[in-house]
Image 1 (cartoon, rainbow, N blue to C red):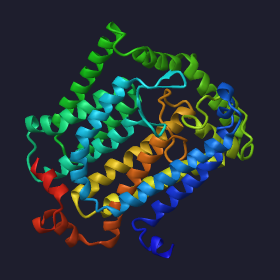
Image 2 (spheres, one colour):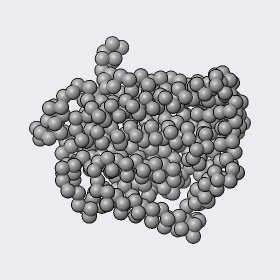
Image 3 (cartoon, rainbow, N blue to C red):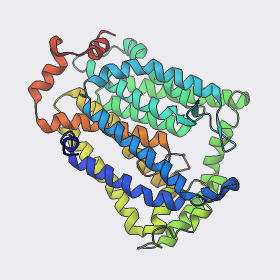
Image 4 (cartoon, rainbow, N blue to C red):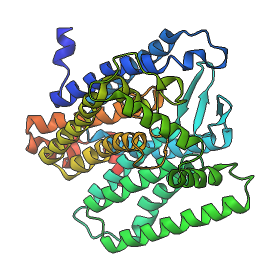
Length: 404
């Protein structure tokens, strides 16, 4: 155990907050899963849901440990290799049309023989942002040619986002926003960013009109998007029902909450252990619990910012932003939905909501962040530069990345 602890490196504050959120998640997941245990003729075995959540967390922390041990510059080549892989996975997922609980869940891919469903858009989002960080760092000291960037940067971006879009508008929008922010921070010319933003909006409009004209291509997707927006503005519909129950849960919680495991609205919220788990937390732990969770994510954002500032290379800074910002933004979106600041999006609360894909990709992102912070904490600027520029020290993945 001592040897294992010695091998844990990187920002200790990030380790502590992530571990605290993961341990805390066991309580609300156990409580919120009680209604799921009785749905569809279930036997009420809540423990099986908690055990499944624990397995996801254990595997997630194994990913954190694995990724934080990898030198961050290796992710340059890894992102290059994984781009075609995630495109293939997204195509398979889009055409497979997996259903979960009778609902359209074409964002999921079923892994045979192990009874596992995986949301490929989560993996694709992480890989794409790491790829964008690599590209922007590579051309930091060069004048970016718009035509050249279209082929090597924007075509992969639009292909991946385009494959995510039909099944998951919220994730596609989130990824596109993160790419634009990353490109802005990475000093991509503002004029070209304006072109890309305009082109993206036009493509979204064309996709919407096409899906509306040929509904069999993407069943119910446009209607779902429109209904969510209309329900949000008119306070009606199934999504608004969930929001109303979430607001009741938050109001019932008061300042100190009803106590752990004493939620009532968990019996009425279909997504009480995932999309609306924040409402259950506030109901059981009150305003104090809700604020503490918010502060935990804001503290993570603060530590992520420190890692970015301390990073000695431009690529390390961009990589830290690429993996860290989406985690915080997703948490704020989830909490915003629960208090009806924004329409229902289907985004989970990182490290707390149940669900393997979300937990694993969040943990992978945290592991990459810790890999960057590991170098930052050592303050080995000279060694960092040698690692990234000296051919004798380059690894094969970096060589592949730089030659493409």
